[in-house]
Image (cartoon, rainbow, N blue to C red; front, top):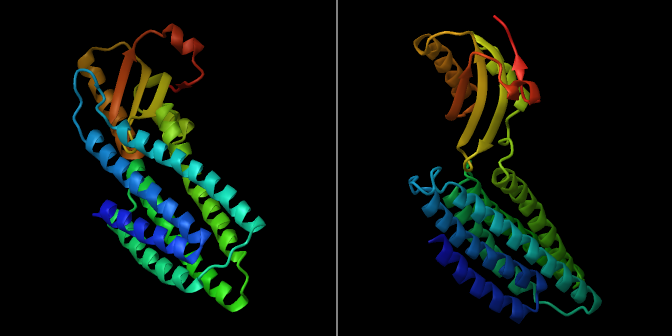
Length: 285
């Protein structure tokens, strides 16, 4: 529904932009068109990331949504570049604009984009957050166009129109940068956003029975699912006795850091990685 509504509004806004000779409206129409594609990518990403794991994709397809978000952000950057160029050309060669058409169409756009943003919601999923940011950015653009149309009406300064387009482009870059950072961090298996490596090391080292923690790795499978693997040095004991330590470790990781997928390797003798790794903590009880 959001995709169909966005495409319909793109057609209306593009026609109105040409009739009003408004670069701001045409810029916003281009932005809305990328939003339509963003919604399509988001839907595809949601479909794939909900598919279960198999023998080939053993972690499932959770990163499909992250890839969709990354592509969306790159599209926004490209669009911003086009808008900067067209705005510069319009500043060099001003053209009269129809502020009445600008105001009416922008008001409709504001209502449409706010309705879609409310429908999508601002969740933790990076893919849907990218689409949500697209819609919110369009709503802000529409509000700016309304203010610009009012300013043009009372001042007669047509340069306000390309200046609005430049502001829209800056807003597009701002929203895209955060998505690029977050998606690249996940794709490069970086530390999940909001976690501190030293905090995880300290909490693991504080579990009763843990002597040493090393070769620790934390990464994200998707926007919300995090995984961890590490080596844990404990006293020599039978597996039945070490089970309580394992339960405590997993409890700490789940409750304190929202990490549910773990691979913990218990060791009774210090391995070579313990001396080589810089990601370790030592603690004795």
